Length: 143
Image: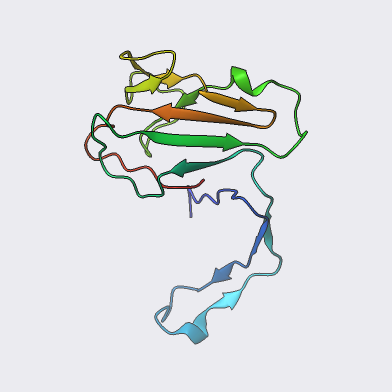
């Protein structure tokens, strides 16, 4: 197998890995547990959105708020320096000119690739996006 990814979430999770030799894999009795476990620790940074999603294409007057949070006192970098960039699922964060949106306040009316936070606390930042995302873009409510 290649390109198998397990992403961290808001909580630590332990996984078993199961294996089938390729013969009669439709029969659940041919699967065996591989020794050991995969433990995924909780993600350092998590996010949530409001309203809850999936969120379809938005209208001009709708606002999507995305809040990014880190564990309390886990780092000393100020949250007011954080930036938000929305990218398509098959692309990485290094991609520019990917999805443009309108941030409020501060960049009203400007179609930008990344936003500065609208509200900042010690270990979280909220980003408000006003303009509709492109067709076909859904935003899940947590990650």
